Length: 477
Image (cartoon, rainbow, N blue to C red; front, side):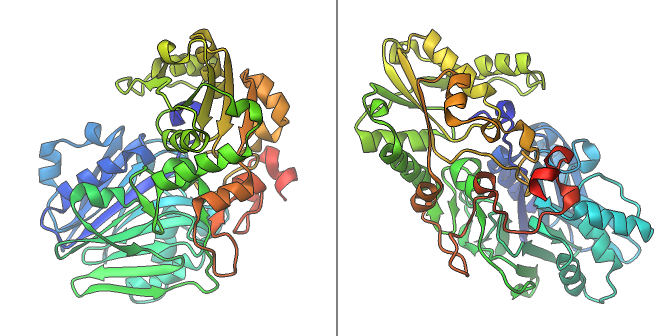
């Protein structure tokens, strides 16, 4: 669906390379392949073995970097980041990687996720004399590393990681090493690959395909990987790890050509669509045509069509040449943005009973507008089917739904919501159906291996009171 319009946005994406003479160019292309994970800022920090330096800015990768800038970033190691603002808000100062210079060396950080105890840690650190340069939760890790009394960077990092809670895929780079860390619940995707003799790290495996790297394996929950001139070294920094991969990575956020824990995202979405076909009412199965909301719902729509035998058609077309500048916070302009981004195909939907497959509903504004557009284009009926359960609970792990008040399904019954969006029927995929369709490996304790918190309210980590929005504390505590 249209992430900018509906209020469901991924937190960011990270990319790193160590030991390649064209590290800056490789990182540039790696970040381009992860652009879907964040469009508000991007940056790269390079190491030439003696110093760290970087370049960053607000906007898309292609807007921030040109050939001269990329060629000027020399070195054989780099970390990069694409950002969508969540914790800490926007602004140039919050664009990553964050770069810090000390008398004894330099440190760069790139982070995908959100620390649920960042506010508490900031309060403690400031009381001890720390001065924060950003409002990003990522900076907390730098202060914890710097304050550690251990001698080696790896030991200081392990101490710092033991103090932070929540979702994180960290890339930490010094002049001669790169460290890779994933939280003990494995909430975010992170993979290791190899390009010649160089190692590469990315939030999604699609980045490896773009640069021609070989996928080696996924980073495991609670794993700390150190990459330097002597190779790759791995150890567990956390005990009691589990497996709670964010379900929305499969449903919406990741690119269809990425694999997460051996599961192709496109194939998982097709199975979600096929499972939906088993759970809908008979009236939906009597429809004439199936269409998906571009782009993330196309795979589920194809699966639904295959399972039901209802023809799949391009009933909605996405305008890929509309810029981001029209996106505004007001509802009226948000609805106008839907018209600019999507167009119904009258020849496909006119006089037809249409099944509209989408991945989720957050505020309901976009769903209502799309249903209206289809009916204005002549659709007799519009049956909305959602390839995930209803989002009723905030996410505190890096997706921008940290306020329960903005989640329309949390305050309306399914029938009320159907009326609000103007659909002839509304079907959400069940929680059990979602788990069965994705086919993720089970966690260490026999749990499903996926984080379902936004659907069920069962969080895989402790949620600290100062993480919650004030309006939600009574509900969450």
